[in-house]
Image (cartoon, rainbow, N blue to C red; front, side):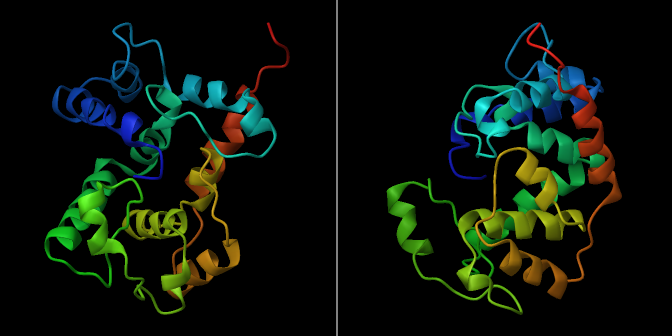
Length: 199
């Protein structure tokens, strides 16, 4: 998870149960993760984010907990690339943590204090200089590796911005990870959802 998502992402596995196991529509499953009415679709979460001052000012999402928009990026990953990306990513994180593969480990800044000793050392994780990537950039890199496409534009849209786009792009290019036309189409469609007025 990205920084600050602890109280957000805990809700998302419920969408997996409702969608992948019970066969419910992804939008309905996503909506039911925090409300019984299921009225929050992924698109509604996108609109809610786009009308916020932080988004309009080019800022990062600051309020993540207990709101659909706090984990809607994962729902977008699912609707574009499937649940296997989500499952594969988390399986790799667990394998790295339990196998103590420090050269590839995912670092979570909000991990419990007693676990942080394990993560303090910076180690190289890629062909360029991934050891200097921030936690956000590392997560974007690892999510992109799992998806097989560059998720930077999608994750940036949802309020998680890399601090060094050039270094992240270098890491993605070194792995031949391309941009995605699916993400371009989705973000272009989101632009059409922006309300024309406050009504």
